[in-house]
Length: 316
Image (cartoon, helix red, strand yellow):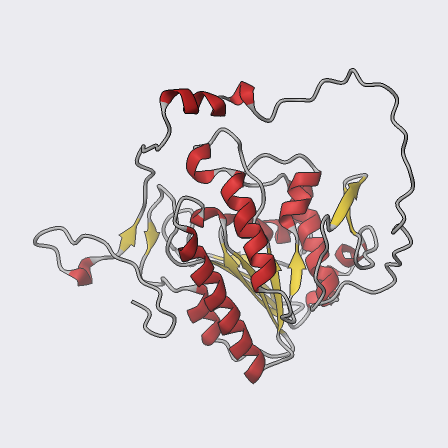
């Protein structure tokens, strides 16, 4: 029980086993449905996500009256992305509310992140970032912390440029059939509270996918608590950079009743509303994965690259 933020997690203790013996945990998805057999047929793969027939008459395309928007402003924290927030062209993401050169941030990544401490807090879609960094940072190496499971914490260093990057999963609920350690468990709010912050500290947060099968009020409370922790962080260290990565779309055939994008989209909108007005940057992963037609929980590498490129534009 986290008394400060009201977060709690309960489990049943097996008879004869002390609570102090609780070391690791995994979870499963017990089959359960509220749908009748007839209703289930609506979610058959052939009945949704189908391609629209292409037999159309000619289309007339008119210039948008608001197309004179100038994007001379550099991408930075405090901006509120519109809908839609950008578009893909030749495998590059271009936000429509700020200026982002095609691949410029990546070309200066080591200079950009020099002397920085970066904390990635969230799910495995954010873990994809730290797994991608070695492909573009030749001096970046992982430290083997001998953790257990796929969701152990990741620690990476670039000693030449004094860069430290860490990924750690968010707190309960965390849905995975792989064991993970409970001894280093902490909610994102707790992790933020432990940081002093500073001009060289960067925090990236992503929550959503693991909350989809649970009541919405649990997610709302968690995001509100994260906002409160960020507000407190800015009070003691306003120069700290905080970036919010939204959740992304996922498969349409993976337990759609509980994990579908219907739930994800509601959470995506809630995150936009709750963090509105806060001096944070936004990586709109939902719009990115929608625009490129990604329907996997872990987007392809080209999407991850563009997410990091947009992230860098807020830092460089």
